[in-house]
Image (cartoon, rainbow, N blue to C red; front, side, top):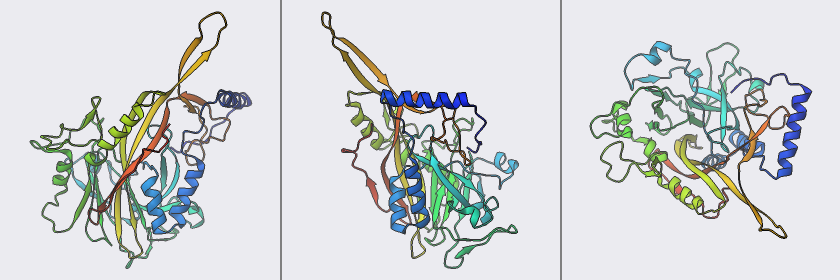
Length: 395
């Protein structure tokens, strides 16, 4: 994500311009990635907006966080021990990150993501210009990572250990790493909650240790070991955003499927709605989610799961050419859209630079991200909102 722009010659630049102009003449859609306007707007709200403004933009903008840096732990800690071991971030230097937003290039095309920098990497106030401070909880397969947020009443300013690192006002924003079947827990007082993130990389070869008839969500709660607590335990699991359990599910495999693929009710409804469009083909809708937190003016935190879906398709175009003495010639075209291929120029933060002529464009499936709704899961079971997509233009 942080590769720097490389050298390019005039021939490459000319070719890029020629391909861009050719795609514009064909009428192809060239801007499937989240726009710079969206990046700037969301960044400005997170830096300068009111609590209500931040809440509104985070509830409606698809944002796919990265995995996060786990260098605060040794390789022996991460790779050793038992499945589900809890690993606590203890230094505030490891809990605070500065983030810069940019467009997602693949998988969740149309969404935003962000890169992170540590306080040591951005030690001065000037170096942090345009970067959003937040509490950030990373992720590691097979472990439960934890952090506890400091009370703004007793710690209005966060000081860091390193010499020459400027302090920062106690951030009112929280993100956890990207979730793709993970469970996230929020426990404790609303002013000083503890956050936990547990998940498994499906490509790691490590299997979730389920008991008989136990679900993944129940297993993470068991491994968390907070069953006897009197504190409220707010949580989200994969059934909430990516792979719903069927009613009265007998075991972890008893999940909602549509065309053999695990999904959610909201994502299935979106896919079924798009399927009736005769101008779309090769359609897929994949649900996903993200968790954010905000602290209000009273110093109390609220945590929200936002539910999204990534939709991809090809558009069908019928071209009829009239011929005088023969039958009309009918051509069916299934077209994607033009967006950056592997040959791209990146800015200093690793995001694709769509304005640079060295970025080569290629045809790919039409893709977009849709916000399906959100649900508040801490400090109690709060509002659960489903967006009305009936009049929303998807493709």
